[in-house]
Length: 200
Image (cartoon, rainbow, N blue to C red; front, side, top):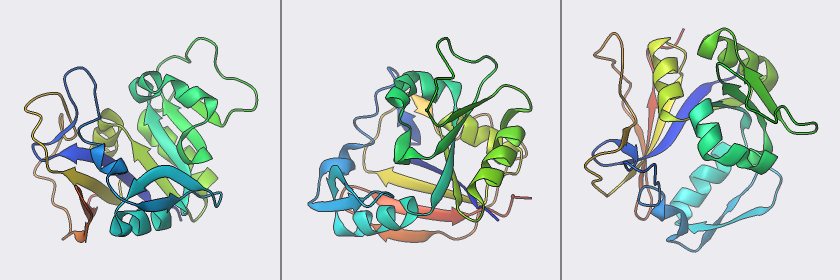
């Protein structure tokens, strides 16, 4: 059965974006090394990171079978130009389908009923025994509150933003206790992978 894993790059003080939705500070580690990241289709990402980060991302990305994102993330990314990250089927949680969508030949499913529970169910059915990746702060919070996550993977960056979009906000039933992390030290980033005891 698919594992549901949330992942984001996060500042040391807990933000995934600055007040203007800028993410350059928390993603600066994506171009601070010389090791390529292998994409699921066998090609190399244009980004160059540390060897430790490249090995972790290459191994993880190869196992992703579906992606879940919120409408805000979809809009900010401009629908990824019709080509979602990693090229996998992407389930967008939204109240309404965006104008001009769905588009023929693009791997997007707009989940307008049932919220994150329905999106996770559909994504897991699609992914089989591969990973369902969750992207976006609000959707991650909803999944965590609904006890749908198996892991939380944080790419912790050594920057303090002071304000912006928090990764963990609006949490229910706190404290939420996680398992001890697996730690991978990259350059300009520390990867922390926590197992969740809250998943159903």
